Image (cartoon, rainbow, N blue to C red):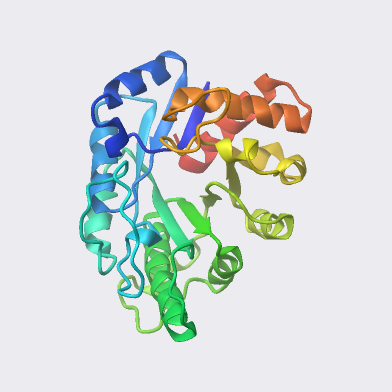
Length: 288
C-alpha cells in the first residue's frame, strides 16, 4: 500500500472524472489526502472524502497565494479553481468549523510563498509580514485542534524556519488563547521540499517530515534524500502537477509508485521497504 500525502483531486482539473481517478487509485492500493488551498477547495476535499469509508482524506487551509495582501497581483490557476476574489483575512472560525469533519487529518497547505512578490523594499516587508500573520493564525488553529500541518514553502525556507522557532507569536492576536497552546507540540510535513540540506536538517531536528514528489526527477535532491532517514520521508504527487516520468500529461495518485521507485534507487534499498516505511510514516503523522 502507498499513501499520496498531497493530492488535489478537489481541483477543477478533475471536475469531470475525480471519482474515476480515485477508484483507479484505490483499486491499486493507493490511498490519498486531498489538500485544501482555500475555503472552497477545503470544503470540496471534505465532500470528496466523505464519499469513501477509507483511503481518502482531506485537509483544510489557506494557501499563502490565496491570501490577499493588496501588494502583488497573482495569476489565477484555472486548473485549481475558477477566477475569484482572494480571501482578505484568514477566517479562523470558518476553517475551524470545516475541520470538525472526522475526515480532516491536517491543516494545510499553509506557509510562505515569495515567488510573486512586490519589487520595492517597503512593500516586500509588508507582504512578508502579511503572509507570516496568516501562517501563524493557522498554526495556532492546528495546535488548538491537535492536528498536524502541511507546509507549503517556496523561496522562503529561512523565514519559515524563523517563524517555527518563534513559537508562532502574533502581536495583538486574540483569536486563540495562548493557554490552549500549552503542552502542545507541532507535527507536520514540509510539502515538496526544495530547500538545502542545512535547511532540511533544521526541519528534521524540529521533528518534521519531508515530502518528495515528481520534482526529484527534474532537480537534483539525491544527496538530501540519501541523508534524510526513511522514517522521515513522505511520498506525494501534488497532482495534477509535477507528473513523474515516464508518464506525461495530468498527474494522479496512481503514479506515486514512480516516486517510490526513485527514492528506493537513490537510497539503494528495495521498493518494498520504501512502500512499507513511508506508508507507516503517513499513518503515524495523520493518525489514519
